[in-house]
Amino acid sequence: MNQPSWSPPDASKAGATLETFILEGMFQVPGATGMFTSLLNQISLACKLITGRVRRAGLADVLGWTGETNVQGESVQKLDIIANETMLAVLKRRGHCMGVASEELDNAVLFPQARGGYLVVVDPLDGSSNIDVDVSIGTIFGILRMKPETPLSEESFLVSGRNYAAAGYVIYGSSTVLVLSTGKGVHGFTWDPGAGEFFLSHENIRCPTRGNIYSVNEGNTARWTPGVKRWVDHVKQENKADGRPYSHRYVGSLVADAHRTLLKGGIFAYPADKKSPKGKLRLLYEANPMAFVFEAAGGRATTGKGSVLDIVPTELHQRVPLIIGSKHDVETFEEFAKQDPEGA
Ligand code: FDP
Image (tube, rainbow, N blue to C red; front, side, top):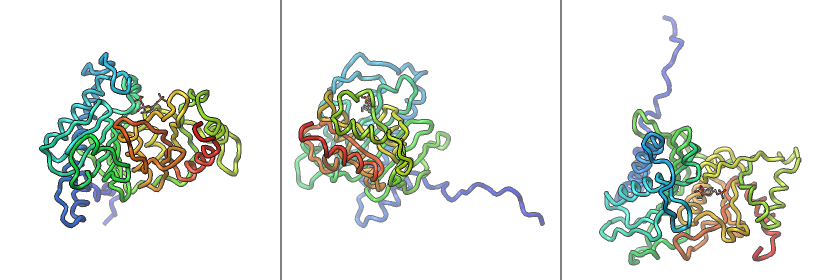
């Protein structure tokens, strides 16, 4: 008999949904209560709902500015509000989340009746300036373990990134991909709109040790410290042996710039500058989740002066400089940043 010339596609991953993956993780933890698992599933549900709204935004009349500005003084887009309300409603529903700190809310929302001992930090829709022009945007999240026996309050959120139990992001790009780490490894799941599920597509992501792309808003050059200016000059200099000059890519949505950097290597930097002396990005729900993911993938995350994950926040919407990427490339940045005098 002739051998068939066609073989069916590999079906071994057909059952590898995000939900199954999370459940399998739970079965490995003796005595797990299922609450952490439930919380992760609720976050993925909210992101499924948000991706639906993002994909239909131009038809559903939800593009554009609401007319409001948020606690950070930034224009609030209609989709920012929709994403925030979706996330809050979904997290409140199952009662396993004790509170949420969101980019869109001045104060944290607390759910004292909930059980579980976990808090969520979230930027429901990152990259607001790109919403109306169909450029990739995202959701960034982190799950914090509350210290046992401590009262629930806004203070409960003020712990370093080392206390996060999980973190990740969803990119609403050419496809929708959820990237998740619970500390051991980083995995990516692609949304299948037909099945209505996230399926494992990027198993055990490792950030390359070095890359050849730098990502920074060069419009800020005049505001940078001498060290940052010298670093950008360095990556642009011709040096074949060292793989320079690097290419430049800057989307202006943290999720998109970070996702590319995680997969292809290189560096993303939003350093402190004269306009934003403390940095622009928010520690709790932007910098920490990204730092958590990059460190779990073998990359590096720094403020230029120290590890992002070691900072103990003093306020909910605290800003920090954020430099993430391939270990080698971030270390090179740190060498240049070290040359800046204290306070520069
Ligand atoms: P946006 O202001 O559009 O929401 O979170 C803030 C953020 O975007 C990040 O997603 C992005 O990396 C950065 O700001 C872009 O800032 P610049 O426009 O100053 O480059």
